[in-house]
Image 1 (cartoon, helix red, strand yellow):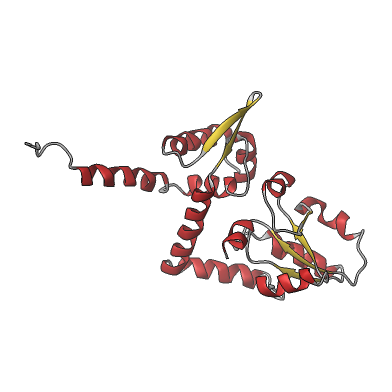
Image 2 (cartoon, helix red, strand yellow):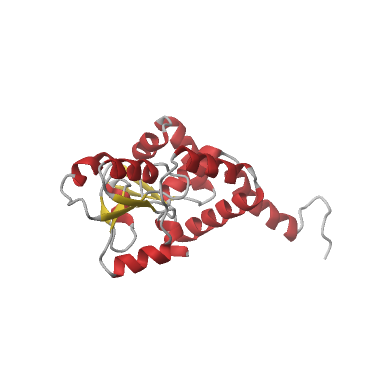
Length: 216
């Protein structure tokens, strides 16, 4: 069979398909949108609000992600609800780990975050599970309620950041607390622990988000 040299080979066609995903990942904004969606389904409006982008901009990025099937959507009334599959979430975690391993700027940014909140203690998953089993610690999920409902660390309770101070007023001071949000680069747990410590609580930051927690 005569294969014309002008036609791409099967191997070339395959790599061109792989490159479609690569091109999608070349935008920091699209990576942010995928990261937000890996915490739970959202409308365009929610994504715009949580990323600080305009609705029009988010819509443009979503269209590119939809074309490569990195995100999907379903209609609920007049709203389109966007989400990502678990396989995309796993890929994102692998990408973050690779980037952290290869790009020296990332561990430096992480260090900057820790220096900004010196005196904030982190608790390991192993230690936390031990204390949760013994009922000696309360675990707080600081994300919006819809993300908590989409999936959370088993045993955690939903206390969105803006409700934290009111919630703390309902607790006796001897209670130990641990807080998590969207993962290692989210500042909310550090800010929350700072607030809790100022109010006299023993509190810890959980480094993992739900995605990382479920994969370790």
